[in-house]
Picture 1 (cartoon, helix red, strand yellow):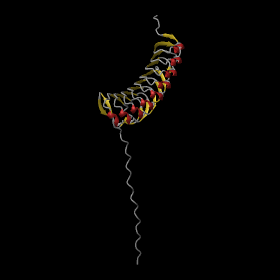
Picture 2 (picture 1 turned 180 degrees about the horizontal axis):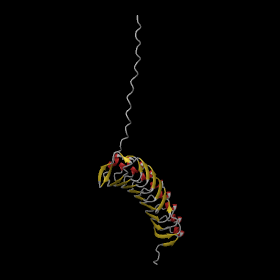
Picture 3 (picture 1 turned 30 degrees about the vertical axis):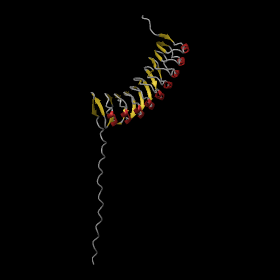
Picture 4 (picture 1 turned 90 degrees about the horizontal axis):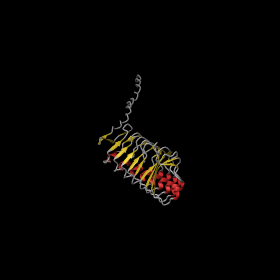
Length: 267
């Protein structure tokens, strides 16, 4: 049989002593999680590890590597959550942490990743609400969390992410009305919101997004003034049917006639 490539066994904890290390890249077959001693590599700029670990939790000590500009931790088999300490990596341009069974919530601390330009976690097991703090990411051009289990309303703060070009949220359980602040995202070229539970009308402000080349909405739940793109052309969405008018009230009954006056008495 062909020899199996990649590191077998475990990462030695002694790696934490290599404090001058600037790049650590490995494809590994690990029998346990990444060692917390990686947090001691303060000079690390690149950390890229693909592992088939039995336990794939990301060490919280990763948050101490504040000089990281390239971080890729991908586990093929194990489940895990995003540690809140990732919010300390303010120079990180792209968040590539987790595996195909990533679960839990998106930490609000992700809003501190001021250099982040892309966040993609489609087809995972994420739950909870979409953090409003993501609106602080002024450099983010793509947010892709489609086909998860996210709930709640779409934060109005997303309207502050003015560099956003791709917003892919379809296939979740988001609800409520679409915020009019989406109309502030003038750089948007793609919006995918179908497969959620949004209600109410499509904000007229979306019609200001002249750079859109793709938009998908649930026309059965979203109605009113709005549009969708079909083959690159904007066409109106079906308007909501107005609620049925109540039946007219019957006219008021005339007042009863007064009783006839008695005949005059004879003289």
